[in-house]
View (cartoon, helix red, strand yellow):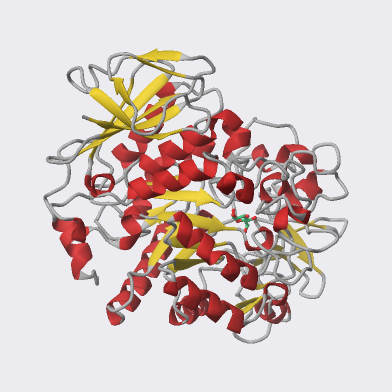
Length: 584
Ligand code: GLC
């Protein structure tokens, strides 16, 4: 197995922290840390970021025009939700040509300009790679449906069950993540095909080596265009049970069409997934080794899976390397708005315990599939959650708009709703599942459509709070969510945030603290009150003996100024307040 020298050094370095809680690859010098091990990945949702041509839809030139904003914020890596040719049934996650740019987003030349501009500004670009399914408009699917030689088994086709009365039933009880049967009858081919998402997203058959080869080709195509890696979509859905067994019922709902109706033991997390991840890792490592002058090419994998599975994605029991960053969604899935300090600490420690040694931890605070931070934890928690995200060891993943504390727009009407799972469950229930609220356009300014677009109508409505909540206003203010976010990124660039030994503890049920320390460096401590009441905090035990804290970053409404000193043994934190301090 190829491993670049840098990685080998990391692997075999004995200089990891002595603490079992360290989530950080540590060495004597920071030169040992590769770019992706301590970066902030900023997720851009292209459709909603910036519209350059006034059609109400974000596009590549729009993104390029805003890259200086990312650079100014201190962002050095961005991952883009799909920009490829697509009928847009699932807004780009249904790809009809993996090597073409979606025309409403721009051209290949626009993409090349985006990459060039990004690299000029020191920003690496990671693309979304959607291997589990294509669009039903992809030529592969059309050829497969027509049984063209070489394409017959590109997708998962089945006869289903022929009943005595001549009707055909799907081969088993598998459901689509987006509601309803995962099987769709294809009139022309006279067979069912599998689709774990919408029926317009047929599952590719990864047991067919030709499919694996075709997808490798896609990866190489974009690597050659200069991308720094891939976020791999829905990776744990890649393989299904070959004998097509029915999935056992979960008992969670009476609705047989709901995805929650059964336990997905035959359609998700199959062992073959790990082999595919390792295969792609070899491809990326091989490419990196052939282009040592360019940054290491990396993969981040999207899977809502059990923690031990995710740990294996990093590296399996035999030490075979896999995903650089199996996304850690636990701040989204496992820590709810009413979580107390112990829940937060437990969540962080759990990841670090499971993660194999020598890897970089990662923390995802939001994405286009889940409610925003302000809507999950409350608007008053925005700064504290950004402090948490950006001062933990390893990699932080921010969804665009979270730096401003953008809020979900929950009042999108049924008429304006476009998200497929929301449309599938109908008018009564759509608000419970719709992902539109977190996908509304980025709020740049108080101009029309929040400065996102000049169109009379945008693809999703702009949140009506934009006249107050927008980047321009936050930049003009003395202090804002944005300025706090920016200060945190600046702090991240300091050596202690890359190298510091990590330790986290609940101070009480309401408050937790963690520190980054390293010999000859000043310790950095983050303290967060997750309760709705003011708390008096005593950190003397946590910092060993009474010491002073000097405020490095405080939230928008904090009474503490930067540079102010506090006694570690007694200070108060307002409801939902976070503070980042230096220990002196
Ligand atoms: C992933 C994407 C989501 C998409 C689904 C199907 O979960 O993040 O937006 O709908 O895959 O591709």
